[in-house]
Image (cartoon, rainbow, N blue to C red):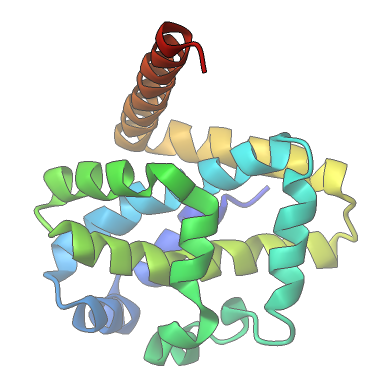
Amino acid sequence: MDSIVDTLMNQLGSGDNLSTISTSVGGDPNAVKSALGLGLPMLVSSMADTASKPGGADMLTKMMSQMGGSNPMDNVSGYLGNPEAAGGSGIVNSLLGSQMGTIQNTISQKTGLPPAMVGKVLAIAAPLVLGYASKMFTQQKMDTKVLTNLLGEQSKMAMQSSPEAANMAKQVVTTKVESGGVMSKLKKLFGS
């Protein structure tokens, strides 16, 4: 099975596509490539996490169907010429939710790109990840259970190929658990 992250890094991490993304976000190409290298595994992992929750796979298939006939994977260079058209910021917010800020800041610290630029890189990458998964979903005539398993496998592959992203994912999960712990303690304390 092809890795979504490896395939997209091969397409985006060099040449004209990398220059187009770097120009679009206003960042250094090497830093943008590093941000993609960390961001793509996080997006795939987040999709896998979403799919594993009740109703999550249905939400993802709905997002895929909303792309309609304009899958960015059909014409990557065309998409990169006008990435805003795919609604990437909405997709990335749906996928990363409350972890968005933490992920942006962590990638920012590792790459030197400002968090706002990292957000733009993620907003460009998210429709491509969703588009790639959508192609697999339709070509292989999957149901949501198969999609969930596929994304789980893709997440494992992504984390194995990028130990740095795997460490980052652990940090994000730890932050999530710790903040949840504090909130539950406060709720108990105040009896709400």
